[in-house]
Amino acid sequence: MNDGFKAVQVAEGVYWVGAVDWGIRDFHGYLTSRGTTYNAYLVMDRKITLIDTVKAPFVDEMLRRIASVVGSNRISYVVSNHSEMDHSGGLPEVVSRIRPEKVFASSMGAKALAEHFGQRIPVTAVEDGGELSLGETSLRFFETRMLHWPDSMFSWLGQRKILFSQDAFGMHLASSERFADLIDAGLLEKEAAKYYANILLPFSGLVKKLLSKVSGLGLDIEILAPDHGPVWRKDPGRMISLYSAWADLAPGRKAVVVYDTMWGSTAKMARSVAEGLESGGALPVVMPMASCHRSDVATELLGAGAIAAGSPTLNNGLFPTMADVLSYLKGLKPRILAGAAFGSYGWSGESISLLSAILDEMKIPQAGECLKVKYVPDEAALDRCFMLGKALAEKLR
Ligand code: FEO
Image (cartoon, rainbow, N blue to C red):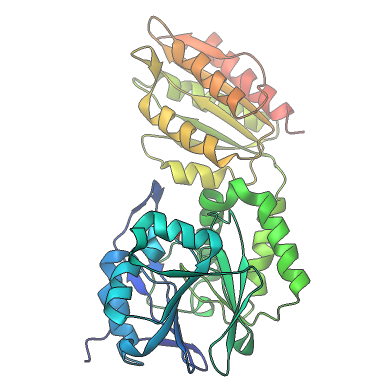
């Protein structure tokens, strides 16, 4: 078979056999503007082992890449590091087609796979710290619970110094290059930061614990092989350092002004709030939801110190895009020092108190008054917006 779907060698006897999803743009609410990859890895030894699988529609692509190295019926073991469907969705078909001797997952992974696929896949649970001999090489397993699912684990191929890290240290980036050292460093950092902000931010405390556990294990990591984006074969410590920095990131002078508008009034207010922030020494980033995506707002909040949220009132409630973005941000638990709520209204004006209530639920202390303006803000109203921005900036000093 020569249809171009080839494996890519990562190290001696280790191959990338995943799939590139160039077209995906919505990954459970996250804007994947550069697509993604679902990485799977083949370890050649007496027990040929497949580490992770791919999203269900990509099983053929993965099996073709495997076939460029070895007949897939020779695979003995499959290891599932993470049961989310972008990595396990292909597992039932893979198991029925290649009929491995065993499928391994963490104890929580074994439960999760049963809850996804019933008993179709007999899974052997491995222990945290447990070891599996493949022949000349062996895999050690380390649970990484809640990073970012309860079942998540790392697999360590010590003889090749490769850490298979499932989602951790990954990014949503489709590319024809498989290795990070062949891709623009700025692009990698930007996409990795977006991934951290949208997937791992709520678990930053656990990230710190995991990094110190990995450091304590003394693993001499030469290759970092995540389940999305490129493989890090040079300087894998760079990604680990970035995770450490993001997990520790203190709120800074950046202030995100996120709003939507019906007839331009809340937009005018947002611009005045931003001017006030700037005059108070903050660094505003203004994000109108008509043209910004919720996942880009989440990314901007990484390292931000303040958020100002503006919404008109529509049918006694929040403007739909503001309800959407705030629901999304609330779940990500950003570390924000101060917030503010503002908006224009026609006759009832509930949106502003609704914004304020959400900021309270997010445990973000609010600076100044909740600012509501009837219909169109005049100069005096815009001055109050400016002063609200300035008061918010004061909280960042
Ligand atoms: Fe890439 Fe949590 O799945």
